[in-house]
Image: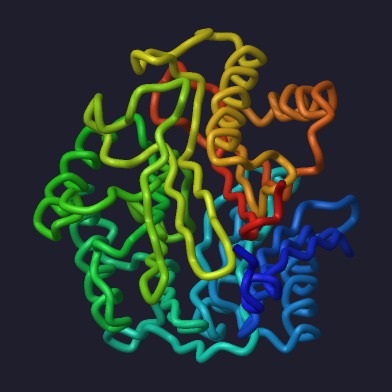
Length: 373
């Protein structure tokens, strides 16, 4: 069977410029630009953000989503920009300049519209090529004195309203990110509320999304900051992808899939959840040994990629989380030793959802149909 003209016109263009790592998914109808701005010597976070915006302007694109890891001083200076952008900024705190950075998604030739609830910008939505996308994020500004479970439920309720505005429901959500303050103190409580909200909204009747849950502060002092992505439309196929080397997270009561594959006209996208050094029984491996935990994590992620006929070179974005920022060189040495291609990754400090886990990696990869023989 010969590929259609639409399929032949779908391709991925990768560029590296001015400290930006960019993967552009070129459709016949529009282009998606996945942008990672990594720290460079002598360049501030403000300059990183300006580089992202300059690229977006040069491409005549619109910002769809932006996540910023900033030091407390940097976020305090820039937080007002959230309300001046065409998309919400999800502000998170970095340990220092070396763990700061920006990830963004921009789109060209799309009917991008803001998702506004009660005069607050909470996300964006667009439709292109018969596929609808909705990304929600930004600040969760409910009273921070509320109990953690109440803040969490309020976040899920807010996102439900945002999805409704975009013409979607939780059953179309394929990816979530949760950044919990002091995660180890209340992760079980968070999971309980998430389960209740997913049950109420029918998430378990469909495909449970991929997810990341780590301990990261936000400049608002909220218990929870989060983001989600929903995709729906003509020709969209969503499937759960198991980890060949691990049990399902659902087996031990954590409500996410190890990975989700979303096939849209022209591309297959693999979204790998936050992944750590856990064995096939769900137990932590190599306690206290960050090098071995990194090696195990990379082995697990590579096995998921391989199971979908993908590899490290197909990565469009990634975030590596370190319990101790001093361990970042261990990860870099692993990548160099195994001759991995440069990953479009941010390297940030965060608490992992278990006290004995030292490292976690999330990664998205994309291929065009028939791009491999």
